[in-house]
Amino acid sequence: MGGEAVAALGTDSNATPQMPAPLPTPPHEPERPADDILIGAPAIAAFLGVSKKRLYYYVSKKRLPVGKFGKNLIASKAKLRRAIRDLV
Image 1 (cartoon, helix red, strand yellow):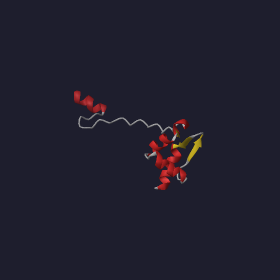
Image 2 (image 1 turned 30 degrees about the vertical axis):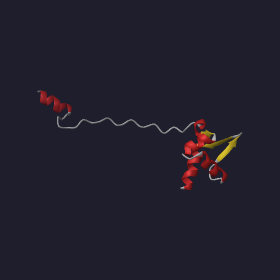
Image 3 (image 1 turned 90 degrees about the horizontal axis):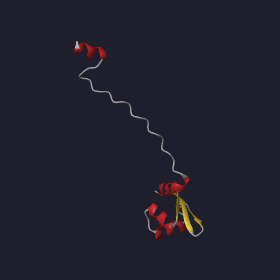
Image 4 (image 1 turned 60 degrees about the vertical axis):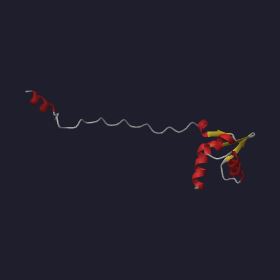
């Protein structure tokens, strides 16, 4: 009767176990606006992977979307990424 019960339940000893469906992944949350801003030449240069001297050269040639806030350079990470993508 043991074999009949297994057959009645629809389980087969040769069948592979069914994996549950994966959970849906949450959509990527956009960065907070404050996380997108870089303040100061050292931070911008580090983000771009260039020296401060090279950064100032690009700024002087208006090749990067960088602004001034007081004495500091400021830039948006998203705008810098777009500018780099457009340069390549």
